[in-house]
Image (tube, rainbow, N blue to C red; front, side, top):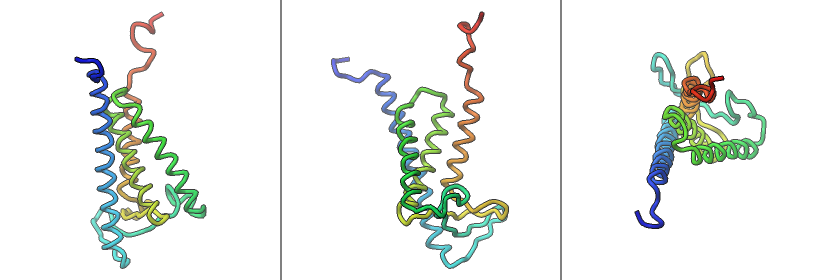
Length: 170
């Protein structure tokens, strides 16, 4: 190794960051593609029944479950943009410091958040297209955020306690 060569740890961190950003980008692009499809093919009010779920086009000016729909769209965009930026910084700064399930969860949540932010930035609303009949209409980004949230909870339940181990003994 010569002076100025990155350490193996630095190379590994760079790879993890690149993989995380690539994964989040691919998942966000997939959801944005599904939203574009829904806007194009379901805009006539038609619904597609898939037994457990129905594809139906709805536009949400608010955030989760339409909360904040009366707020100015610029304010909703600014607040969600700030949250997404904070999440992106957190994902960037924490590669390789936790369990793989935590890294997966953060990437999936970031992907969903970026997708919904990009969708909202285009016209002030988020495109929803998945309808169950008993739950508000949602989209793939919402699924990503929910799955990532559950994975974060599961990861935290499985994580060893910082007080466990030989140092914690009296």
